[in-house]
Image (cartoon, rainbow, N blue to C red; front, side, top):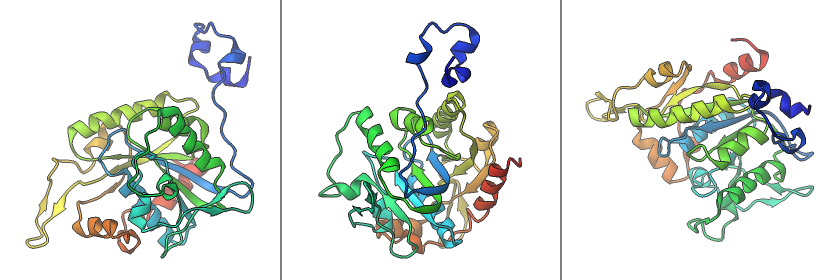
Length: 285
């Protein structure tokens, strides 16, 4: 029996009729020799429009301001927004080996790799089928010289298709962060993504959930309004996940993103994130 068959549910239940040598699970992809990453974390939702890129960027900025070396792999190939939020327009350079050297953000030196940095015009569409998109994400891991990083964050596209499946099966993730917004509709789709994670072998631990666009504070009267309905942890409770952060709708944040100056935004929402990762890596619940 091959190693990959040992975790196959069909094999364990005695219903597998395939040749073990023909159904082996995808192997984890090795990075190039210049890449040494301590923690690889995918930011996932399943639902579009809940702010995965915003959460990925805020988390990266928070970690970098705490002194960690951070990179972002923009896995949303057909809808990349990470470079614009950081004001990065520089094309990847030629690395010391066979790969690309990712450009860095101007203030905090966050390394960023995105397909938008390879296009002639940033608003050119990428009209590719799923397997080609998944292949590009794999190359962003194997062919980019990330160097020494404490954290590499992967901004995943919505859905439970090719890219999330490829990332969970073939990139050596340490953890997943789930993003939602307060609406029941969003929570329903997010539960599909969580269920997908539970079905993948070997499992990837979910560190917790971030509720984005949870509320809005009026700049004049300071009253808090829950525009998208009551949230503040209910989605996480239903999935038995810890709530990592509750983020508001903030006009200043949106303005800085549009101007490519997200690194100037101040938040303490993720100040405890390194401690949670240390507990996860050490096996402490």
